[in-house]
Image (cartoon, rainbow, N blue to C red; front, top):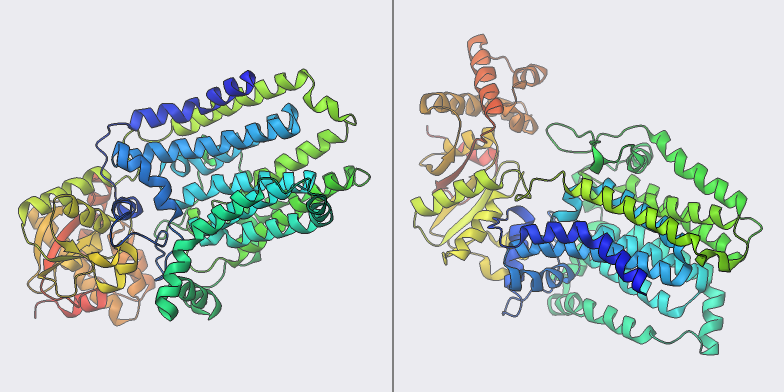
Length: 601
């Protein structure tokens, strides 16, 4: 027991160091983290969150488990406590899973699992560990679920199955994108172990500890079920199911397809991993993953096949573990192929624990073909294997976490904070609706709502965003509307709206140059709208905008083209984001088309 405690302390050391560093940091959250801080603050009020994190498609993830998990940390340690808490929760889930396998299956298995845990950390990178965000709590829970499913197949314990049901229910609450990659492996494990599970249940030898986990599953699902029963067809579960089943998901873009799905899953095997110096190739304007070589998935497939051949004469539970690994890998391929619309990296975060689970189980099974006596799993040499795995895990985790900026989560936080504080100090208006305008990169609008509320100001959002911020933050008849921009073209268009007033602005250009760039952006945006290429408006801030305009058939005066390229390049090189908070009179301005229609005549 003492050895396990020492190993746990060593494994937790990198997480604890990061968590301690964040204590007392005056952190200014933006985007989802600002919304989380607001919703955690709503717990135990008349607008206590019954649902989870918002989805940009008009519904929320099914349950408030993420807010509950963050709440104690924020209550005790403030906003930065959410960062410390997230880091410690990730570390605790990974370390406790390794300890569980050590107790149940011995040191060799724990060594394999601990080493693969380090690969998962290296894959998701520092952002996936440090950022308080529901996808970043989901992936370690998924890693723990896969470990429990392996135990279900190997030992057929009803208690393990109850734990797996709880973890699956928690995953769906944290991020509904985990539904397939969690539910299908859980169902597979149940099928593989069904006969032995029924036998143990009937004999009364495996029912202990089942009820508490089933009760916990019901408790975490009581809030979303209550919300659904209270709102009927307007309930979140109904809206979510309708979105997925009625074809609305297809309206936002085509599916990734099999080739890209294989490539995304295969890229979880990058060498070196993303967190240790490698970088995922992303599209410059969308931030989507660029699919690589789909043939990389052959590594996993070959590993599963070789393991199946090596264990075909081994006991049924070991062969069952091969089938569980194969089913999990196949589920990942299908899930990656079915994603619609955006291909942002966080939507595929599960691929790292999934790929490493297949790797861990196959390696452990191949080792088992040479170890015929079960007592050898816990022989003294296993401590050496585990010691090496622990040391490697600590080094990899520390190296991964060290690659992140020490006191920021999102790159725009310092500049965004300055912009927001300037806006609140410049204008004392109340009854303001905050509306994000243009591409939503870092969530400045979310940060503005959060900062205004901390100051006791009456700021809110449009009715359609009540599900995201809480219904009590909806302002039906605002006294003013503040547009918040984060990108250069959006800033230009917002400033050009009739009777618009800049409450605060960030720009590296002098006033004359800034006016010139504003006029150019507005003129070219109107031209793009005229030919139905509004999708290129955000690219007007790129130094390469002229080439895109030519492709769209827009002719630009050579002098204007040179000026646009020079000013865009100057903004790009400066490192100072061009963004603004703009007060407008028109409450119906919500997009580029309406904004351009409200230009001064």
